[in-house]
Image (tube, rainbow, N blue to C red):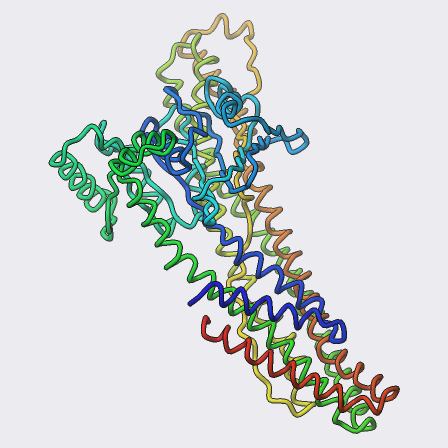
Length: 586
């Protein structure tokens, strides 16, 4: 399976589709998009780990330069995406979409200072600047191979919901590097994190960092200990290798151009393993998908070419009768399309009702959870402590709870909505294929069905979302009755008032959760209908349009028809040859 063969096949297909006489601009556009996807070959690699395991140092070592700041305090919950570009630049993106992006175009020496203002707890405490994520563009050889490195918020820091945000993001990644170290060995926090991670990312590379502090026997013992824990506690039984590295040595070896340090760091073994996985697994799957999609486009081009040839060699009177029959078939397909669209719109309303119903259940669940927690917590406090302490309690507990529920809720709902949508996918393919089938049978051309693309998913979350969970209860004022009340009575009164306000706070957070999912429903259904409409237009252009073109040419240029047929037959031959290349990669 050769990527370059597919690239060349798509380029040749585009040359055919660029033929102005054939009206294949739509096919050319689709082929161009597929070529860009294959050439870009973007491989998203997330770097995960607990605070102070050397995660950022490992990223810097992979890049060969001190790009990311390393800190002695936890970084804020801000992911950093590192892409390839010939010119160094940084974009800071904010939660408030109206806020302008901040651009950095200075020297590499000033990059750390710039990033420090936005991604560290020192420069941006508790993310008060409202940063969503940071994008770094840098000319690294590793990134040039198609990697996107993603430095995720560290687990086990003071920001408890970092872990849940990271887990929610992982399904968008092709693989992950999990970084631990020997000081101390793997912790309970890391074990619990990995239990959640293992089902969300297709491949995890386990890295034991800071091996320069160990001798050979200690390293062997540490690797075996980590392997045993991953098997017995996390439930991961297919660990092919644990990579022992020294990120510090690797970085120094690259920056100071000292090959012996880089060799001692063992980083090359990890880099080779990542590249091998990309080529054998991720790239293979990408090539197969692109080859199949390209083959479908070529099949449509072949249909159009064959209909043109058949139309040129059919008597005009017979051709005019055939196009009238085809027009009736297309009218019938459009009636079916209207029925499918109407049912789809009805199902969209049902999906939205399901969303509201599920959100109401989650609201009741969240209220019961926080009511119990709040009762238990207030019971431990003195009345004078309650106001300040309750707000601290909510600040610490609301974000991790709703970040965790957002992940579960969005995944479960996406599966239910996608299941509903899949039946419409089948029907849409059937309607579009009915036009192809009728046209080819009408013109006495063997019908070859296209390979349908399945698995349309409800897109709910954007690329990365740092959710803004509401933790603030409206102020509760003192009354004369409070001043006169006993401690026990005052506690009961304050608890009652907090519980009344808790309901509004829970509702606010449920809406924060429900709204992006509702938008995802709207966008997915809208895009489905738009795509359905475009597929109908494309197949009508390729069938009815081809016949109409032949009729016009037969009426005006009778003597040139034989030349046209010869030219089209040559293009058919070229297209069939390209299809054979693609078939070897499907």
